[in-house]
Length: 197
Image (cartoon, rainbow, N blue to C red; front, side):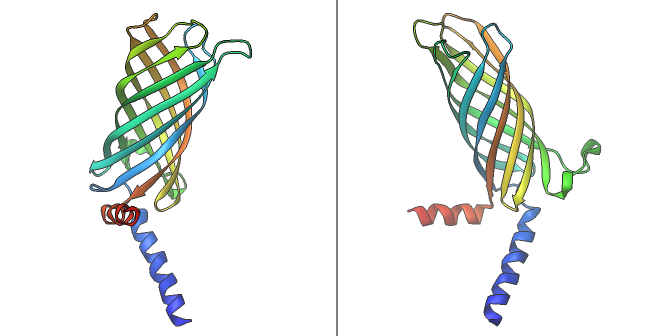
């Protein structure tokens, strides 16, 4: 019984120690965003669901760089054509420190961040609709609420656009993303990779 209690105390102490270390240099972030709604800024904008897996490495405290993949499907109405979105590219994140510019650490369990991405992407529309492939880009603020020291639920409002070489030029919209991220210290990331092998 003493061993069980001691193990529990050490586990809690370990989680508490990593609570302030998720976004330090050398750690990894992996996760995904699910775009739950999308309001088009161009004619014909409508409802869209996208899945965007992403991964990043913290090159400095509060600064992560990595990559993303974007896959999506949507319709503007029941009888409209289906739209398929795709993209791949690089992303960067900057997390605001609690004292930075008067930013409060909401409930002491989260951090505000700014995310930007750039890559290759586009969309195609079934039944002969317009399509394009070209530069995929986006930027916006977000918030990560840590439900555990290493798992954050995230909300992100992002301006996203594609400027391409297909039937249309620039298309853009505002997306509201919900998702999660897992923050792994380097030693834990190596352990997870070795466990998979």
